[in-house]
Amino acid sequence: MDISKRHFLTGCGTLIAGISIYSVAKELAGSEAGASVDQTQTIKYAMVHDENLCIGCNACEQACRDVNNVPDGVSRVVINRTGPFGEYPDQSYRFSRKSCQHCEDAPCVKVCPTGAAYIDPDTGIVGVNQDKCVGCQYCIAACPYQVRFINPVTQTADKCDFCRETQLKQGKQPACVEACPTHALVFGNIRDPESELVKTLKSKPTYRAKTDLGTRPKLFHVPTIDGEIVL
Image (cartoon, rainbow, N blue to C red; front, side, top):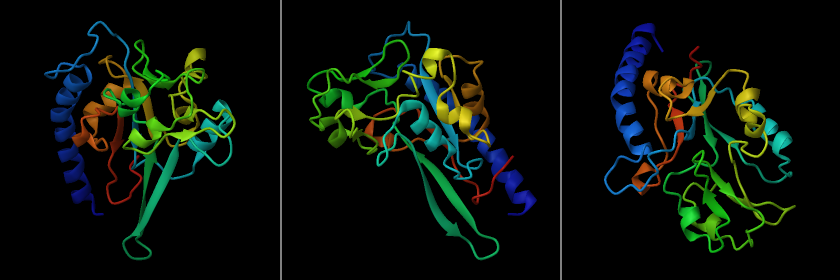
């Protein structure tokens, strides 16, 4: 991609990001009509995956597996590779993250008959209470992102919880964030205007998956620009 085209797209992206972050912040703060959200909540965690910085090394997936004792055969986070695009030698790939979206209006929580699927009121993280889970798989069927699974060891529903029970308890970032060699992942409090997360959302164009469903996901993606790694 030539320099002028890249600068043009980057400039447009910055403008779009500046316009869109206000509506996103309003939505996730629960200020949209009909939203029932605790306005006193000061922490609401979210994540950004920058597809331009991701190299598909799967360090995030392995770190998640090690830290959270995820058994072989299942995974809390997957990096999907599509491509190649273009003609050799000018070919590129796209790397996209698939994991729990930590929806504000989570379908999995709505259908769970035992209350095992829940949204943590202190962090906004969608969690699973293994003591309450009966393995009915209603949540798996309801999730439009297909990111839940039955843990073959515990026989209960499982998925990404932003390392709430491991890394976050120790005051650390999620394992995937710490392991990423290109800093393609940004995690933080979307309610904090000074957080790196909010600064990233303000400076880069992002998209979220299946927003038309009204789930209000908190996993953001910076779209690929011609498959390049933009440092």
